[in-house]
Image (cartoon, rainbow, N blue to C red; front, side, top):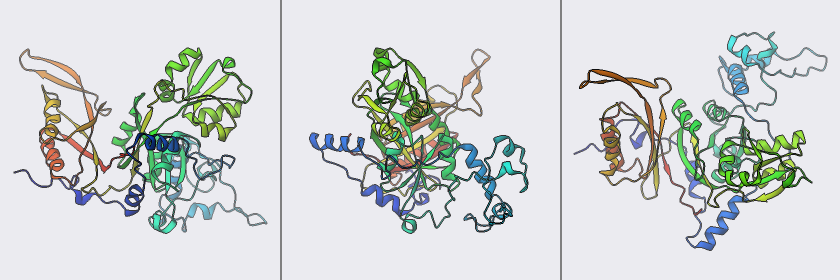
Length: 434
C-alpha cells in the first residue's frame, strides 16, 4: 500500500499560508450558473475600476535596478524597517535648514562593482522607492491593505487582475516580471499577480522560467476576461494610423484585426505602457492596443472596442507569495508541479500515467529547456553511437489538492522516475463563469 504522504516538501502539513488570503479568496463572488448572470459578471469584471482616480498621479514602476539598489541599502542592517539604516544616517546633508539630501539614482555598473561609502552618491537609494514592509507590517490584519505587485503601467490588465484577486489592495507596478518576483522575495510587497497563459496567445514562457528560478509559491489563480481596445490621441482616425503598439501577446491576440487594418505592429513592454508612450510622445500616426481604462488614464480616445480575434479572450493569472497555501478538501483545487526526466523511450508516457492511473485530470502541460544544461549526451548501445538530446523541464497542472491521498501517492510514484520534482503550489481553482 502506498504511503499516505510523500516527502516533507509535498506533505500538506508543510503548506503554510496566512489566513487573510484564504478569507479573501473565499469571499470572491462565484456568480450564477445562468447565462445572463455570467454575462453580467463578465462585463462587470472587464469594466472594473480600481480604487484610484484616473487623473491621480500614477506610481513609479519598480525596476530591477531600483530593487537592487534597495537591497544594497539594507544589507548589513539589523532590522528591515530601517530604524538602524546607517546609510540614511550618513546621507543627511549638513545644511542650515537641516533637511535631508535627496538620494541619487543608482547605476547598474556601480552595483556590480560593489563600490561603497557615503561619498559614493551613485549608491544612494532612489527617492521614489517605498519603504519595505517588515514581517509584522505585511500582515493584512495589521495594515488592512495588501501590497500586490504586477507587471506593467497603471491601466494594465495585470493591474485589473490584481484588484480582482485582492479587492482593496495597493497595486504596485513593476517594469519587468523579474522585478515583481524579486519585490515579493525582498518583502517590498506581499503578493504578485502575473499572467501565465492566454486562451489565444498561449503560454507566457518567461514566467514559467521565473517560477523555476525563484522560490515563490502559487497560492491562487484568476481567469480574467480581456477586452482589447484600439486607442489613439483625440482627433486621430483609424485611417491616420501607420503603426500600432502593444505587448507581443496583445498583438498576437489581435493579429487578424491589425492585418485587415494594414498597420505596422511594434512590440512594447506592456499594453498600458504603449498607451502611455503615445500620450507622452504625442504620436498622431500611432495607436495602442490596451484596455479602456488605459485610455481614460492617459487621455486617449477609443477608436474600436473588442478588437481581439476571438470574443472569448481570457488570460490566466497566478497569485504568488512567499509562503505556501494550506490545501484542504471539499473545494476544487489545482496543483502545479515541475519535474525532469531521464532520456529514455516512454519516459514521458510513464510520468503522465501516474495521474491517469488515479483518475487525476491534467489541465496543462508545458515543456521548457533546462538552461543550466540544455543538451545531454545519449548513448545508443545497439549502434555504439552517441547523440545529443535536448534537456527539458516539464510543468504540469492537475485537478487535485495535495490534501488528497491520491495526489500524494501520484507524486510519490512520480518521484521514482523523476530525478527532480518540485511542487509549485496547491491552490483553489477559479471556478467563476467567464
